[in-house]
Image 1 (cartoon, rainbow, N blue to C red):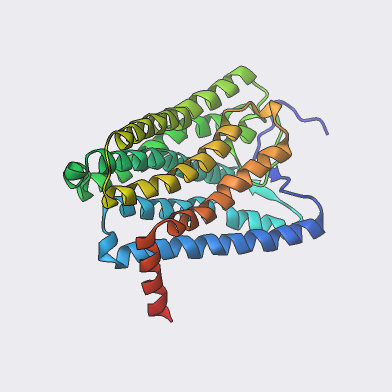
Image 2: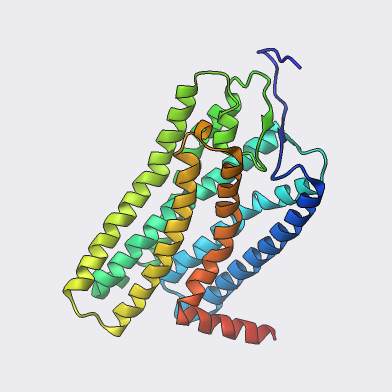
Length: 309
């Protein structure tokens, strides 16, 4: 079918993870189970940190914020994905696609900023323990959390507006299971270099800059540790660094592979795999990673579970 250049796009067609009905049914069950684990695990983290006064510290405030972001981020994508797995027709309206893309991108960018903030929190706790409560107080935590969210939504508005208002030339088929910025931008028939530049600049701001800050921060942390004999309290603070580094590696690795690599050079199936990783697997694993390495959280979770039982 020939499309005219002035064709107005009102909806997109998502091809999904697979076109095989049997495989889609199996994937539906797997994704649903993972989503339920994600919701339960992150909700328990939130409940434990809220109810246990010993966890009312900046570190656990940011951990709770991370769990809230993970729930909201995945919930902006997975329910629609599950519905499409059981549907023959996977059409998504332009407005719905734009909303999904904007919300998911903004929450993802908020998490990028939050992970950098958590690295700074560990830096102050380990390198300046006596001044920690003065520098990182509750008021500052709330302001940082709100600021990160506002900045992320503002940063996301430009590329999303460009994607939705660009010349798509009638091409409305997205070989993906979600409306992802690079895939929607790649549908445009305009100047490809401009599209790649937008993705690249956005990636530098929300990926390269935060990861550079995190690396610099941890270099200073490890230098300080090697110079002093640290106490049990510092060992406890340092143990959380391992969890944080694991989350940072997984999240930034998959996000950079998607947004910093030119879409034309990567197989659509590989792109989908990375999307499954950062949209489902990482948010599901985050609370497990922090819980398994943190005695305080495990103790609080036991209390919460005992109260329910």
